[in-house]
Length: 390
Image (cartoon, rainbow, N blue to C red):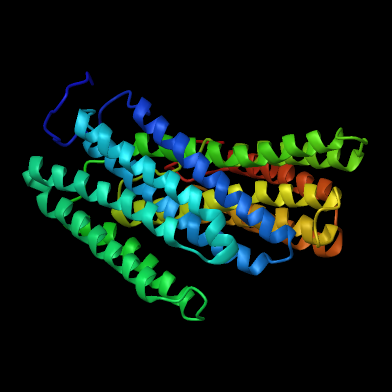
């Protein structure tokens, strides 16, 4: 689509061939990866300091804000992106909000100061409201749907600002109030799309989710690089080399499992699309958390952590198990049949249980490789008619 200063925001063809990520979408992902890296860093520091429970809750809070804003734009763009100046500028405003969130993560994690996170989220959401209002103006057939999006986002944003002004982050009920905010946010697309769905492009959406998966897997590779750097920092430590190699193997296994031959999203049905789209929050969050877990192991092996090696192995194993289980929830239980359908839940349980019986990172990596091999073998023997053989 050629550039024009201003053009109508008319709906795009959901069956348009050769749809690929635009330079603007890739720039949006670049900003998102900075925010995800900040969230993962806060998690790894919390776990290494023996504050895992607090760190996980705060990680999920910030990750939801980052992921939800990314997801809203990611589903909007394939339907209405006209690549004109207002669209570019509003998208860049959303990016600025993501950077504010990234800047506020450390303050939130250390002191429960949510001011920058709420401010960044407000900037992102106000710009998203403006995009939906433009879509409502130029697409009369789906005006009700677009206005529901704009109105729902506005209601949710008022809730978050009210929570910031009136809520006490140290109060026990604060977590429950955050969860209520999540429910409000998640309800918006379900209500808006109920009568007339937006013309999103299924294959393009799958590509966009795959790109973000690669981004979060980069957090694991970053931890592997950190381990190698520390291994040669003054005195050689072979345990750090083992950690780096295990991180590399697990990254490859996670990538292989995600980019299997089965369809990620084989239908445009609303209920299935919502399950798949929403469920990926845990795919992304757990993927980045595996990287945080490896960073924790580096802290342990270099004597900069208060926890033991078993806890470090669990910091890798638990999010890896969640990653396996979530892939089953959003894809395998729909696309596979027979024994292949149950490979990932079984290996999720095995990976999480292993550190309690045999604390060895290499064994976790071996289980990840076995999950890839066994799933591929069983899937090749029979998959549902909706998916090609693996």
